[in-house]
Each structure stands twice: as structure tokens, then as C-alpha cells.
Image (cartoon, rainbow, N blue to C red):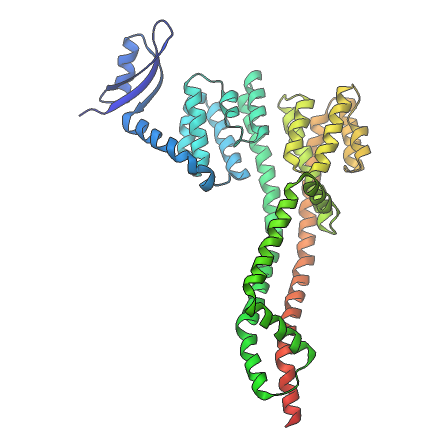
Length: 410
């Protein structure tokens, strides 16, 4: 029995008709509809269409199980998109191929939605815009600019480079913090093991010995005993503290002070500032180079930076530009941007090469962030080793000191 296909097509009068037919192959159905003067918009096997209905019910659970898309995945997608478009493939055919290439289920689902909208005749940028809660705003706006200017392949290449640079920076940060995180987890695990398993055993031994315990041993055993007896209260207090902090950080005032604290932290604050400056330069350069006008580009960069102080500075810069004034003095007045960046922005505005200057500035600060992260890692690692060593030494001392006192009494 031939499979059944559901189809959407336009008749001679231009009206959209939906239906289903049996055909040996998809090609045979297309030829049959074409011979009847239909313009086919979409064709699916009946089983696939039914699966789509089941999936539409399952979308209620998607937000709970969706997997975050990394910069690397966006980079690969844009690179493949640009390559196939450059090879002469249609946008619809390219999207149909890319759907099969993506492993991330949520990413695949979103691309499928975009592809379905393109089949219905929706422009590419609008199709991506309908998934604006998923795709980055920079991606949607650059695709719109590239589609309007007829340079989609070039814009997609720039997007791929943008996400590649972003991924490189993210990987450097992850590499720098991975070892300290592992060391911190090990330290907490050792501390918990001592408190819950080792110290209670020694507490019983010391009680049987009947010796006067040193203050260090008393303090450590006291902490262990309180933690064991009232662990549920300790856990509750910890959960409430975390919940309270998260609730405060979600308020506008809390989020503002959190952003401010991140900028002021010793060692980390400097790296965070450079990271924001590099991201600002890279994103603004990419947008402007793709034909997105300056005011719209600055508005998009505000969301990319994810820092209220810098977003506020860019908002003030946009107001200044609307009044016909240059951006550089406004950036300098904010006190958030390095003097070198401001000078390069001013030169770029004067010479009409702002996107080029910002690109060079992004390269420089991304390199600096890499150096700073390497230096920070070389400082943090020995410090954490010393901290873990001190913690273990305190525990060991608390156990050994009473034994020394017992030996002296013998």
C-alpha cells in the first residue's frame, strides 16, 4: 500500500488548499499536483504529520527539558548555513538539511519551526524572528540586514566568526575556573567526611579517655556535634539564605548592586571589565559591519552585555547620538570604558571606520583577557591548595593534640 501524504498547496486562483493523497513517492505526488496547476507549499507523510500533532502537545514540557545552545553550536550552524547558501542551495533546502545535522533537540525543534514558516512563504528573517525567545537578537537582526542587502552568505560568515570568538572567550574562562571549582568541591567533600564520619568516632574515644581536651579540639568537636544533631536546621538555613539571595538579586536594586560588586571585585573585577569591553567591541563591530545602523546596534549590545551599569552607559550614548553628537565623549563620561577604547572609537567616528576600530579593539581585549585568566589561574591554584591544606591541618591537629596530652600523662 502506498504511503499517504498530507499537503498544502495554492490553486490557480492563489487560494491555499490542504489535503491528503496516496502516492508511491513524494516525487510522484509533487508531479501529480503540478500537473493539476497546484503550487506546492508543503508536503509531509501522514505519519510524520501525526507525530507533529503529538509533539505539539509535548511542547508544554519543552521548557523543563530544553538544553541550552552553546556559542559553538550557533557557530557551526551559521558556518554550515553560509557554506550551503554560497554553494547555490536555496534557503529552504539548506534549512531542511540543517535540521538533520543538529543534535540538540530543542535547537532542532526551533529550526524545524523556522523551516516550516519558510515553506509557507515567510521571509527568512521574519521566520527567525518568530523564534526570538530562542535565537540571539544579534543573529536575527544580522540575518535581516543580510537578506535585505543580498549578502546573506557574507553576513552568516560574520556571524560564525562572532560566535567563534565568543566561544573561544567562554572556553578560556571555563578552563581558568575548572580546576579551582574541582579543588573547592574536594575540599567541601573532605570537610563533610571529617564532620559526619571521622570526628564522631574520635569524640567517643576522647570521652572514654577522660582527658581535658584542647580548645581547638573542643571547638571542632562542638561544630561536628551541632551539625550532626541539627543538620536539618543547618540545611534549612542554607536553603533560606540561598533563596533570599536569589530573590534579592532578581529585584532591580539587587541586580544593580550585584553587577556593581562584580566590577569591583579584586582580581576578578578587572577581568570582568575587560570581558565586557571585548564583548561590546566585538558585537558592535559585527552588527555595524553587517549593515545594522548604529542606534539599533547599540540597543542590541545593551542586552548582550548583561550588566546594568554598562547597559545604562550605552543607553545614554544612544541619546547623545540621537542629538547628533559623537559617542566617544559619552563613553568616557561613564567611567566604565578604558581610555584606549574611547580614543579608538573617536578616531573611528572621525574617519568613518568605527567597525574596523572596534574589531581591532575586540582582538586586543580578548587577548588581554586570555593573559589575565592565565595569571589568575596561576595565583588561585596555590592559594586554594594552601586553604585546603590548612583545613586538613586543623582537623588533624584537633585529633592529634589530645593524644599527645595522653602520652605525656603516662
